Image (cartoon, rainbow, N blue to C red):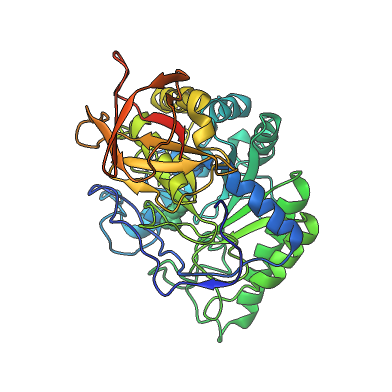
Length: 461
Ligand code: GLC
């Protein structure tokens, strides 16, 4: 009942739901349509462990957090709506301005322990942090470049090697640690050679004409990943973004890099996202949830606002909405990675903290329907999502909120997965009445129940 098997699996089409909102911003990576199961027993074991965690957080923090703009992309000259640039500058001036943000990025209020407490308090069980985004700015103390948080005004701070403190705080709070790393690096002269224009996200010279530059780029990337996997303690997930850096066009020898990373970190889950193949240990539908259950490990990454990083005046999803998304994801057999970002000083907005705390309060009482949950063949009816206990004996019917009203419907009912004995409302542990008509069960809601958040009903089939 519970887990799908990990045999090699190919799907001809990977069905995704329609984008989540009309205001969706930013580039959305295509999702892979194939899955190749890992063979290394240590990786298989870690992946099984990870799949049970269900809820993680992805933190974007970098130079772009200083002005509060879209992460990295504004220095890429692609002409699309979601890349906004200051219009009082030419492109070249803009890039100089952007690179110069390193001289003012001084996050004196950075408090990794407070971050990790907030994340653990939300009930997230794993977290991934941007060590380097596409702009190439490193949030760790690398030997490879001075373009890092540890070399600017924050360099003298005791927490200058930001990544180290973030990962330590994650582990200290029982959160499985993961590292986001962008394969493309728009600051590295071996990727964006300053002798050429930078018309798009890709390497800006012809690799066949400059193989030595590309060789240097591959080695630079490998050395940085070596740093990440040797200097920062145990890491469980290496989340590699920028799927266009891949063979055959932009081949940095990912197999070699992954082999090295696994020598450093046995069992490491690698997510060479959107690339397909053995280095993509789970799939990462972005800003969307697959239409159906999928027979292999996957994670939907979805932002709490419309952006990955901090931007001013952001529009927030409600905690009830996020819990509803989490319920849908878990019923379909995936994990949810929720995107948040601190500001230039290193602080999360109160609204982030409040939303996280609300999610945590819900998971405190309803977590058994989520963590380690199994999937059922009949996993959905309308706004009701079904999960099961690990042994498959108990069914959890999660009534999620309606986007239009922000509440659960006045009448809670569903078809299929009919109860055979007593049914309880998980948050009170008390019995609730129900009636069955044909294939449909209607629950008698206890009076005074809060309809502004998802409710979980537990019973046996
Ligand atoms: C997309 C964005 C990238 C972001 C990532 C997070 O790939 O382009 O900037 O970091 O999503 O999932």
